[in-house]
Each structure stands twice: as structure tokens, then as C-alpha cells.
Length: 113
Length: 114
Image 1: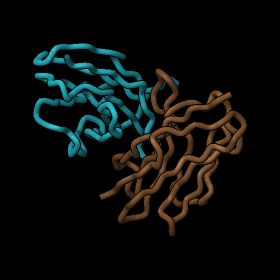
Image 2 (image 1 turned 30 degrees about the vertical axis):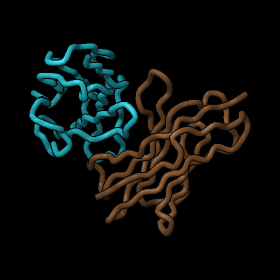
Image 3 (image 1 turned 90 degrees about the horizontal axis):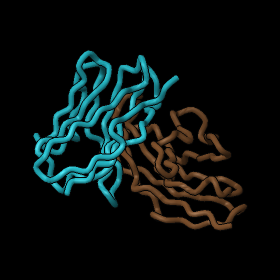
Image 4 (image 1 turned 180 degrees about the horizontal axis):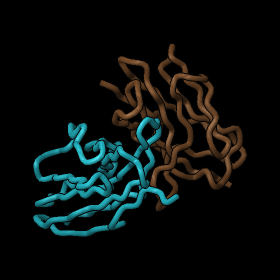
């Protein structure tokens, strides 16, 4: 069974540009989460989808971040326009309905110059 | 609100020595607790979890952790470190039932000396 995949693995962009991160959860997992680790800090929750619906988006830092999960399969996280403080590693995780464990992808390393 | 504190951002151990990584949590409701490991250039991998069953939890690669409610702790141990244990370890807590967001500690990077 394939794990959680994320694309791209790395992205380097300039301040003001737009970047879109993609996450493909484990097949059949209803729950999808986004987390972020800014350098030197702890991993922090961004938002949680149940199928295509946003269950909890309390961790989204501001309206420059837009997450979608059309059709309840893969998800995208768009940052527009990117700022220097958006640099970090963005993790995606998925969890099956009724399960206890979140399974993480390898992360996307974003550097905003 | 929940929080997790991992004592020591870096730990150095000799190969064959005990590995002890400390995690203390705060939670207003019975928690679920997790330890994840991140090897270089990889994602987070679940080591073990506590979900209100046995307080001593055994995980992969010889690791175990004990939930101590009175001490609000969930320390991770391994009797004998191996070079392959060099990684970053994260303790995380979630509130009660599954499905809630994880709150992570700051992580502890383990260096294993030959």
C-alpha cells in the first residue's frame, strides 16, 4: 500500500510569488491534515479535512493560505503571495475513519527568498 | 489547550547505551500520546502510541514508553542504542478521541556515538 505522498519535495520561490503544494493521502483515508514546521520551531497544525470538508482550520496563519480537497481525494495548499516567514517544511498526514494514527508524508521543504 | 514539552533539543548517546527521551504533556482531558521519529530526508514515522489501554507501550525498533498520569509524562526509552537510531524524535498529544489535531513538542535530535 502506498503511503502519503507530497509534491514537490522542495520548492524555492521569491517573496510575492505563488506556490502550490500537493498531498496525496493513503487511498481510502477520509481524514487529511496539514502541518508546518518553521525552522527551529515545533510542528504546528494548520487544518483538517474530512473528505472534502474543512473540519478544523484553526491553525491557518492568514488568508494568504488556501487549502482545498476537491472530491475528497488529494489536497492542495496554496500560498499567495508567499512571504519570507512562510519558509519551512509542510507536512501532510492522513488517517482512516475510526483510526487513531495519522500517517505522515515526507514533507515539502519551502524556501521563500 | 494542550501542550507538550520535550526536555533537550539534542541528546548524545554512545552506541549500546540507554536512550531516554523525556516528554511531558498538559491536557485537560484524557490524552492520546504518540512518539514519531524522523530519519534524515524522510517523513515522520510512528514509533508507538498510548490510547488509554496499557500504560507501558512497546513500539518498533525496540523502543517503549510509559504513560504516567501522576507525572503527566510519556518518556521514550530504548535499552541499547544503535547507530541507526540517529534521528529526530517527536512527542505529540491529541485530545481524547481520535481525529483531533496533534500538538507536538519541539523535537529531540539524537546523536549516536560509536
